Amino acid sequence: MKRLVFHFDVVSPFAYLAFERLPQVLKGCSYEVEYRPLLFAGLLQHWGQKGPAEIEPKRAWTFRHVHWLAQQDGIALDTPAVHPFNPLALLRLALACGPNRRIVEAVFRHAWIGGHDANDAQRLAELATALAPRRDPAGEEVKAELRRLTEEAAQAGVFGVPTLTMEGRHFWGLDALPMLRDALLGGAWFDGPAWNREGAPRAGVRRR
Image (cartoon, rainbow, N blue to C red; front, side, top):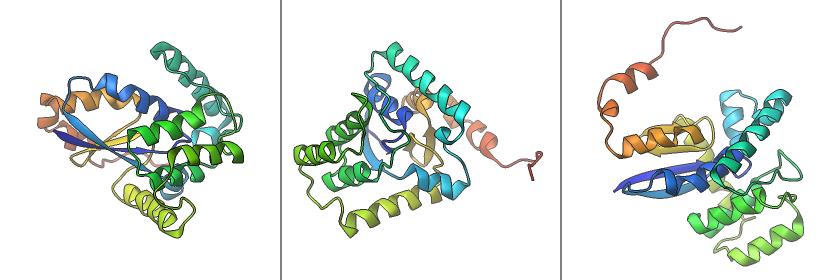
């Protein structure tokens, strides 16, 4: 059985779709998943990037694309009333609960089903009551752990969400799920030189 690490931030619709599709795409594979919340904004800051929602044409395309993908796969998805939203409360809640699949499903669906404000105080309180976290989501222990998970992911080379990690290899994005399946099934490509060769630095024009 292979161990996968699912790096996610609930602010990402692609992370939500990947979460929903994962069991179907990996059907028949032997694996277990560790769900690790992290702050996508922290990754953006680390790598000096902008998020899709910060570039208006890219934001518009992203939401058109994810809604088309959702209807193709029969996944319920509604754009939150406010987006991008601050995901810290939901990430910390998931971490305080112990982020198994049931918990992660609850926080994703809180954000991406119904078209509500993900940070509405009453809805957040109701979700916390339903999930009954073992630790205080607003406590310093949980806050520090979320920072650590974000920093460790960045140091390991994670630059976006969703990212699934298996045996030190990162598979980024919803469209990488079939590639991950091939790796889980022992695809011959992964035993050849291409992974390391194509990931190696090389000469090229650089922007100033």
